[in-house]
Image (cartoon, rainbow, N blue to C red; front, top):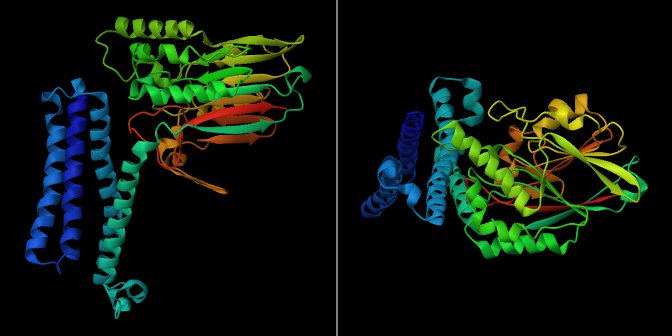
Length: 415
């Protein structure tokens, strides 16, 4: 019932956006010939009807049985249209408010923003704002289509970290960090294999994985066991769980079925040869010196995500080790619990955000919509002597692409 209500609300929002967008479209196409306008309007409403009909008919067309690739691309294209129109409508609304204030007689506002100040320009201020909104909305939509081709373009980021308290035997150790595999989203096994080969080519001493192996179900790994079981390292492969690994977003029919899936997923980690850390720690020994690797279940400071992790259990007994690395899927855990309560955790590794798979990363400038939700969302962060690294994710979920934020393999050299 909740899903039907949510779909209904989304369809209503789509129709309202389409109607509002269409008013602006009519305003800026008045100079076109009648036949051209009719053709343009027909295409516009034809696309709208197809999109709305798709959402209305999902329960009746067996959509979940369609090939995964078709489902992903079709759904993402429709959502991309919605986002593009939404961005355009923000500009239309701003212009409508401007004209409302002008109509209301706001003298100061009128002096600076009235259409009178646009006299002599090729187009009116309202037309300019409308075209600007449509251009930006179209750019976002186009970039999302272009991003479909980036989801397997793995980028390896090398990071060197120096710690005064790191035992001498561990200096120069190479750690390979991956996160958010989301095997249930994959549609190209050969492309995934190239990513695995990139990992192996680094010849890391230690491999650490920070959760979300699947989207929902343990059987999503069936076709990829042979690939990820190839991940080996001299000091081992250690892993933790992410929010998607618990199957919280899937209708299991019964609590027993959901629990069975989680137990099966734990078995998958074991079959891969990965040591899954469930609110516990292990000691790594190198030439008689030791450090601790802690791993907890998902723990988030955000209300929409679960707090299954028990840091007190993982931490107990680690006081004796001079250096500690924590695997914790959600980076909000760092500010909420690690920095204020566990100041001797030297390095925390996380994932979860994917950099929202959409953003801009340039030298000296980074932006993604996810930064308005997560303070730490990609890359390296420091607080006094503690470090946090947030991996941008190996896989993808929801939107089958990446724009500006590429899938990441992180190589950390300790010094």
